[in-house]
Structures are given as C-alpha cells and as structure tokens.
Amino acid sequence: LGSSSLVVCEVDESLKEKLRKFRFRKETNNAAILMKIDMEKQLVVLEEEYEDISLDDLKEELPDYKYIHADGRVSYPLCFIFSSPMGCKPEQQMMYAGSKNRLIQAAELTKVFETRNVDDLTEEWLKNRLAFFR
Image (cartoon, rainbow, N blue to C red; front, side):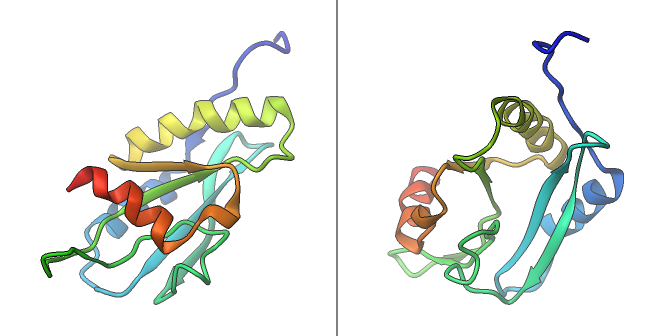
C-alpha cells in the first residue's frame, strides 16, 4: 500500500451496540462515552464511560448533557464532539477524519461538533453550537 492511501477505521461491533443503547438511555443525568482509535487494529473502540459528569469535568471527553432552553423546555441532546489534537501526525489526522464519518453513520449522529483545542470545550461553546438545531 502506498503511504497516500487513506485508512478508514471500522467501528468495533461492541461499541456500536453500546452507542445504540446510549442513544435510548432513560436516565436524565449527563453521561459520556469516550472513544479512541486503536491504530494497530484500525478500529474505533471504547476508551471510557462516564455517568453523571459535568462538562467541566469532561474537558477532554465527549459530552452528552441536559440543555434547558430559554423557554424552559428541557432536552437531552446527544452530541458527538470530535477532537483531533494539534500534535497528531498528518497520517493520524487523516485516519481520524476518514474514520469520523464512518462512526457518525454507524451511530446515526446528527449533532456533530469539532474542536482542535480542548480548552474551547465550555458550556457556552456547546450551547452556541446547539442553538443551530433549535
């Protein structure tokens, strides 16, 4: 294979199942699933699960959080926050970008946000992005 060929990672089957259950969870607290790419297996896999966690505590993770709208309605948006850190090698960044779309399809995600700088990950940052979906 030439070095220019793009590797797109598959999504681990057990992670797909976990994401499916996560979509339909009944709990109303904030929860997150942190995923990573296993470079050797070329698979998107589960890294960590979080239950009842604040966005501040999740600075480096993927949040799913309760959102109280201006008119008082409460919704529980499922957000996918994609982070490809600045220090990644170019081939890693390409693998991440290509695999991201596969993951979005597999998990049927609609609210997809991207950040290069984890410090941007604030309540305000997320609310601004979610405003687009109202």
